[in-house]
Amino acid sequence: MRKKNTELLSDVILQVLKEQHLDKPLFERRLIDAWPQVLGNNIMKYTSDLSIRNKVLYVSLTSSVLRHDLFLSREEIRKSLNIYVGAEVIVDIVFK
Image (tube, rainbow, N blue to C red; front, top):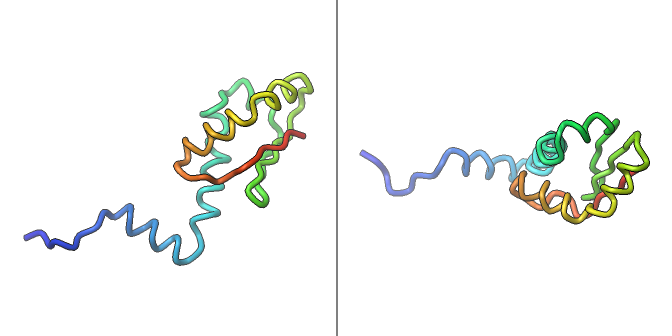
């Protein structure tokens, strides 16, 4: 017989992660892993390093032309990455 106070396992896991302060690193890792899915493998060829510090995504690129193009659409990229992860993980993107 099913109890009335049942919860989804995914909700319980997220709650435990939040209580242990492990949710932020998990979301950050998911966002970095989402970079090729959101932007495509062609852009990944020119990406040398991704890191997040203080809710800012730092992206090292080997192409100055691509850096400029991505800079112009960084707000759109930020929104897409956050939506893909399902949480507001970053508030800005810096291209180096």
